[in-house]
Image (cartoon, rainbow, N blue to C red; front, top):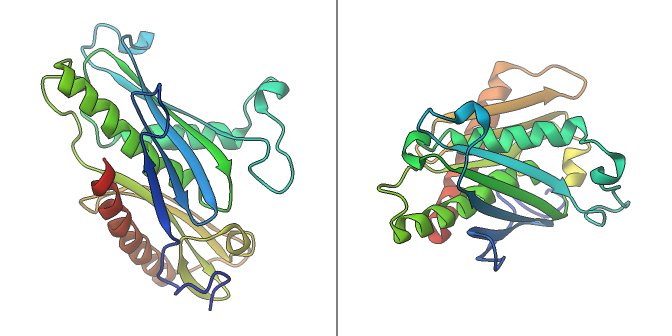
Length: 236
């Protein structure tokens, strides 16, 4: 049995609190086990300079962990005066993942800001952020459609993400922090609702792993994302 007495192919309990923030165009708090992330989407009626005169919009993301989100206080990156490499990488991952399922031309010349703020971390914060930000995005776009600001829905597919890995020699789904910190293989899988891969981030922690293990982990990831997609459909 795993630390949380889950099966190796079992997700942690997923809870979504839709419309969590009053002022955002779309928002939710997503809980995956002990990980809690507030995700929001805000519409801005302008685009970055590189998108001007191209007749398309843009989607970008910001990510952060609150000081008390982990056992030891995390220093605010604003106080340091710069973002860490990890934060920049995760922000880009969230942005790429959501853009992969949106027709930016149908979005029009506007920017959708996605914010993912981790209020409690217990592994899988980046994957929970992607899954939750998709829900926030859908809410924001629905408002634009209802207002008549959009002629048609620009969303092409859903997208969700989950962690997989090898712990104690066994492939497992949705690692908590204690599992992630001792994993022999650590991997994040981003996939659309139709089963297409967006991104796979996999690392061997010590001994290299085989293609057979990779296939097992991808199969686990696909199973988990099917289940997350079903949850998203209830709230998006």
